[in-house]
Length: 488
Ligand code: XMP
Image 1 (cartoon, rainbow, N blue to C red):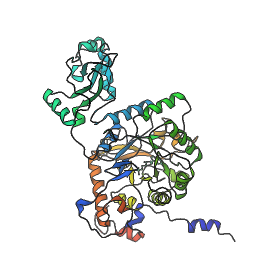
Image 2 (cartoon, rainbow, N blue to C red):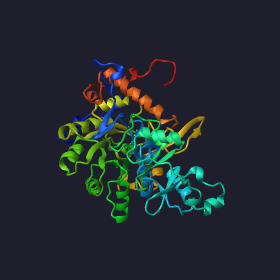
Image 3 (cartoon, rainbow, N blue to C red):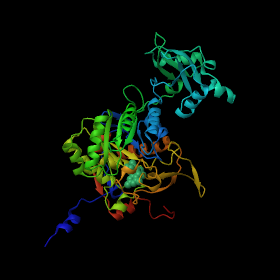
Image 4 (cartoon, helix red, strand yellow):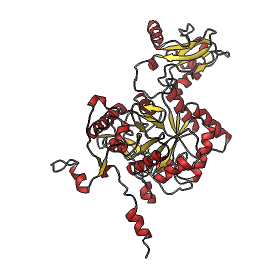
């Protein structure tokens, strides 16, 4: 008599999710102000262990900038052309750095209309005017744009620019820059060397206000992360576009529903040879997948993290449509064990399925270094899209990248099974509008910090050591509001 199939069910791991578990309270030998929620993605330190999802209704440049300024990271989505991806990564890298070295410039004989086009499309308010030898001859800002349409169309920059440029020398301090800006009542300060050549630009906006917790690279620019298909592009034009994008990106996040596939692994290896940034691979959901990727594949040292979870997302239908899934908490525990066994330096990102602040401490207790959510951020001011009103409630659209709506673009088709046309793996719906991302992050931070205090863990590393227990159905009911008159 065979027990093969019956054993599969009875001996398989219990697939537990957030609501199935609770963290056991622990002894707290530190004060509330001492709890430290900072974490890291290998060498990148993040003061806030929270990432926003690479989804087209969640993370474009505005979200990415605001997540990084507040100590987290927003992963830019890839459901658009390489041109648009390049635009997004450039905007993120240029934002709020002390000195912008990729300065927008224009020739003195160019038309005013060209400068206006650059300002309207590249999110900049001033352009440095340089001649063919890169010598600075003036500065042209939004205030210099003439009022008459004819002048905009036919006028030359040299007739409207400010010729007397107030500048600063390379290597000057932030304080010196602030002083010159204040004294001159200017907003922009080109950095010019002794030969008159342009070396950068300092803007008032980038010097203040300060964001002490911002996630930055070694040069003080905001960290920039972008989703990437594991499919190696065959055309040299596409490869060149990726190489250009690579200059602005710190970390590529391979972005597929299930990365444990030979073709995706091989494609990613080729991409890692073409590009120079670091790589997070995912998503995966089991110990075996992590073990295989870490110990049996020959990725280079720029493979710094694994993103885990399959089918848990609030907009996901992968598990319903295909019968396969690895809910985020289960996947986190599985992959955390493999990381511990094979490469403890590798970082783990628990992705999707978070609906309450209390889910965050549970993910860290299961071994995560960072968490990623789309659901928490889709309804904020910083997500793409407009605020709509339904039955008097303000809402924003949130759609799965496997939904029909998201897939019509064609850019994201390879996130799921290639060639699959009929089967959607996500839905598109509305989420409540929740104001700006700062408020959402404040709630999440507090839920995490308070959870850590109750658990007796002063840091994310300590949090990984706390105990979790499965809660019975009755226990779940009892640990939520109950026996009240109101409806919850
Ligand atoms: P939350 O729970 O924050 O999850 O909404 C966001 C994560 O879900 C993944 N994702 C999808 N998964 N079908 C899926 O099966 C989809 O259409 C889809 N879109 C996004 C993704 O990992 C994201 O971070």
